[in-house]
Image 1 (tube, rainbow, N blue to C red):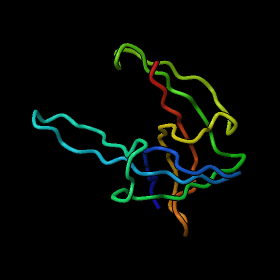
Image 2 (image 1 turned 90 degrees about the vertical axis):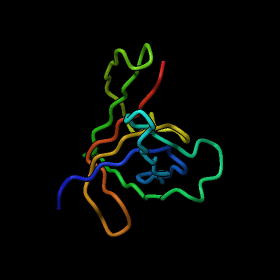
Image 3 (image 1 turned 180 degrees about the vertical axis):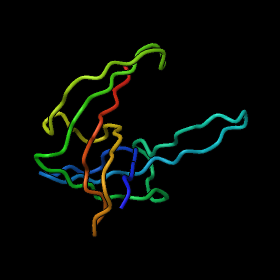
Length: 109
């Protein structure tokens, strides 16, 4: 059981569990990577992954400035999670989805 990682938008939020609409990383024409998210649009083409967390899950917020030129990490809690946020999750596979060991909320300033 290796570590799995996931990134995408929070769709539904319950206590101890959230549903993530998985972002799709595509190669762009110039060889870079483009992360495609569902945003508020049609998410039927996207995987939905159930993520569970508990008191052992580490939470952080990464705030990105200047279009990615610099970023700052700060501590966070489960209370900072909100619907439609873009998050990165690290964890292990569980029966229903992903059991998170770390969740990072990505904010663009």
